Image (cartoon, rainbow, N blue to C red):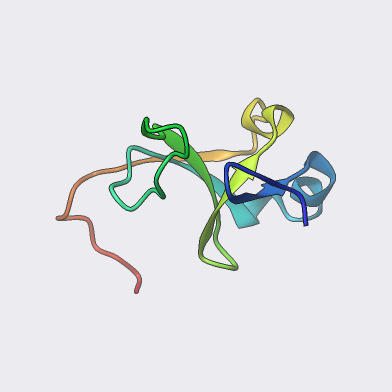
Length: 79
């Protein structure tokens, strides 16, 4: 399984099969650690597997991709 920075890598062909499955999360506190000592500011998220993924650049540029900024602890979770 292809990966980048320890995350499963999602290619455009997989995204195109089910674009609503993937979102980009911005600034979430539960991001995994960056292997280079920094911090991720955005990451892809697979809503079916409920796990962070690495989205290729062509997906990030796709207008169908939903972007979800972190709103703080007062956000109601569906969990």
